[in-house]
Length: 217
Image (cartoon, rainbow, N blue to C red; front, top):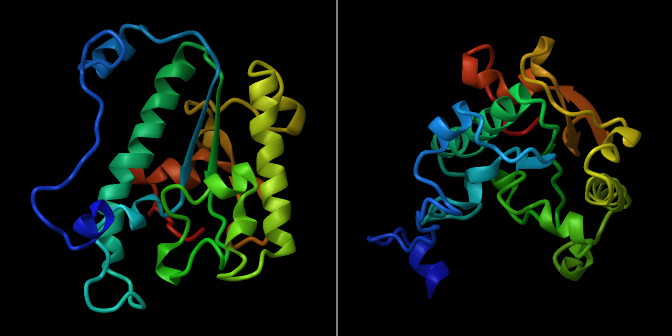
């Protein structure tokens, strides 16, 4: 019911959100961040390159045709790009290690429609290695396995040693004040590489107007 209700674009929207209690979930994150009221613990932040494509009502006439990508970007950039840049910047000022990655990987058994791209949650089967459950849609590729294993290695490195584990894999903390906006890891994408080190400006540049955001990098 919930999925069909949302896909039809019914009103009112059925939403799931945290309730502000100012103990665990706060109403004043910006003032708190500017006052340095942030846990001094390393964090890992991630997003998918076309994050919002699965969070809007789906095309009503034909699922083979994409809806307006501009509408996807309008929702996605504040939701994923601005928020991660802010979260990174405030922590970076306090010398809190922030390890960021972007998932841009697209595989036939995880993306039935081409316009979806790397949508919200697309990285989950890669992290857990469960993509083979969808082999009835399309067979798992060798490249998919390679991307999954590398992504798992990076996540595990952080979980085992948040302070130094990622750097052993060449994944350094992101410092947004550095030249090119620091660096993050990208998994998958049009480069054909399973993972690569990219500048923060490639993802965050849209926030300053330095460049357009690329949803299919």
